[in-house]
Image (cartoon, rainbow, N blue to C red; front, side, top):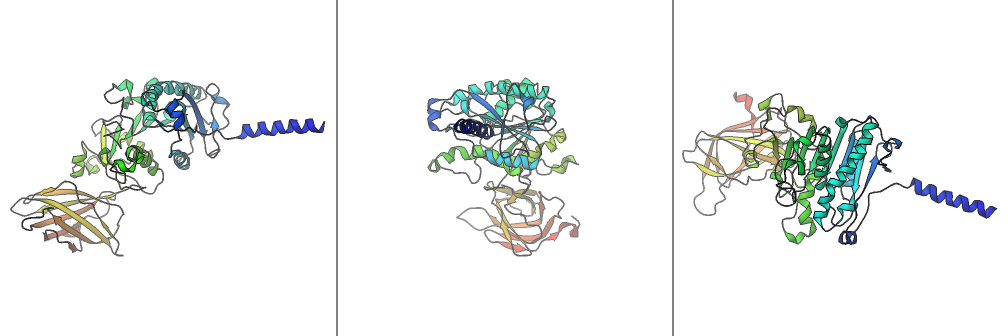
Length: 453
């Protein structure tokens, strides 16, 4: 009798332990990718009440969920192609940061079985099947009192198109879709109904970080962000010798830029513009042109800007530069110069700024030469990796990058330096000075208002 009781208790203990075990994202390997996987989708729910232990949602009995609160906002995170089968490296940070920013239902859409394959086309074909399964879950949530307005789908690569397919099924009534470098191969050139499209949700924001290889080049959203022009992200390898990181670094940068927006270390400010070249030439950096608008910010809080899109062309493209490391922020300035050389000069201007404590930051020299003509204003966009609030000194260096021939002078009638990240800071000016080629000139600026400009 004692043995029987012990046996029953042991069975109960094992069963109880299995029931309490936290469902986890499917972990596969390259062997699974080589043999291929049959599509299987599971939805893992996290909330602030169970942020360390997911609850697996049941497709036809959503209302039985212990933690799902249909009165709250629901965010779905949908991964993409998994050629090695391992869980996405960014998944843990995405979960932790989203729950820290807002009290939401966070649903991780795990379709690793179906995405893990060496045959990319097979994964693409599974995208519509995943969208159909997601619709069944969403339908159940709607019956339970949820609203489409409060749903936000964040899709990575193929996941962005899956989100688009779900949005199509609801005639674009989903609240928001965020596409993180939507996949380009087998989607480029396809009509809107076969990919993510601006009409798939009430607000569609897209970050394009690898438009020349794995990502989608053309606009897909209400607003499309192109960091560093959309390709060749700083800090990413430039040669094949770096191995697999060479292929995925640019593509994944969209994810890490989005994660950065959840950390509140700095806002990544972007600039609506027709092209990256126009942005680099300083033609699109005055967001006050449509007062009382401000420049859109990248990432999770981009939707704060959605009601201010009317003055801009549709779709809106926004460009910006980043540093190569988290939090990726650049502190941008416009250097506005009027020259009085009689002979037109072409060249580059490098700028350093120093605060009263002696801290100095140096800009990157522009990749394109500026043309300086008599009495013509030239705007040069420049950026720094650190913010200098109280500028004590400015250092300028003019260069033509030529090794032969005479050294030239650049005669400056007026120079203005304006912070774009902090437009309320006073513009700084300097008047009537000469830059000798390849010779740094350091001076103390004055607020432009003291001269009445």
